[in-house]
Amino acid sequence: MFAAVLNAQDVIYLNNGNVVKGKVVKNTDEVSVVVKSGETLTYRKAEVREVQIGNSEVKTPKEPKGKYVDYSDLDKGWWCAVEAHAAGLWYDDHAMGAFALTFTNGYRFSEYLKIGVGIGARYNLNHDNDYAIYRQLHNIQAPMSIPLFVNARGNIISQKSRMCVPFWNADIGYAILDNFFFDAGVGFRVGAKRNNFVMSANFMGQVINYEPDDTDFGSGILFKIGYEF
Picture 1 (spheres, rainbow, N blue to C red):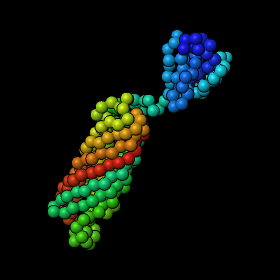
Picture 2: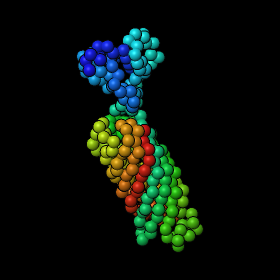
Picture 3: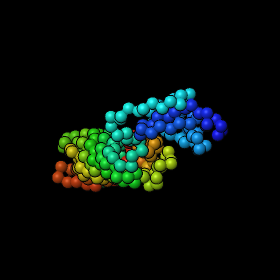
């Protein structure tokens, strides 16, 4: 192996401006090169600008236009999530379902804490037919509402060397045409460090206008599924 390295004619150009010479032994999703010392160095494809096989002449790299940033490896920065919600609530001997689609945007302080603000569209489906007719006649508990909320979430264990990790999440906010709500729960995040499919089961509480001049508190289970990046 060492003799092969001495006669190596391969050159790797990295995005950070460095140049590595040696014998390329892998060039797929990762690039591995054996250098003169006999050590094997491995780089992710996102770190590699160019691989030259069989040419020991090193080209002078062009001055980069900007600082290279590998977004997928950042511990801090902006994050977003798009999620679908399905909930079942019970209050005052009535049952109500709710379906929502939300978008959240915020700042990632670390993999253990992310805070954001969100907006969505929610459709309330009442399972009690008599009460649904009463609601329509009195124009209460709007079928459609617009939730505005603050969200916090974070990993329970590190995702640096794992594809799937548990995480916690919580929301508190107000739904226009509806009322105050909150939810909190745990779930799983599946994917890379900054690009994940997320799913969770939450306990949800909702203030409900079940009569024109009166309110009640409903509680139930909320399921979320979505994509976070």
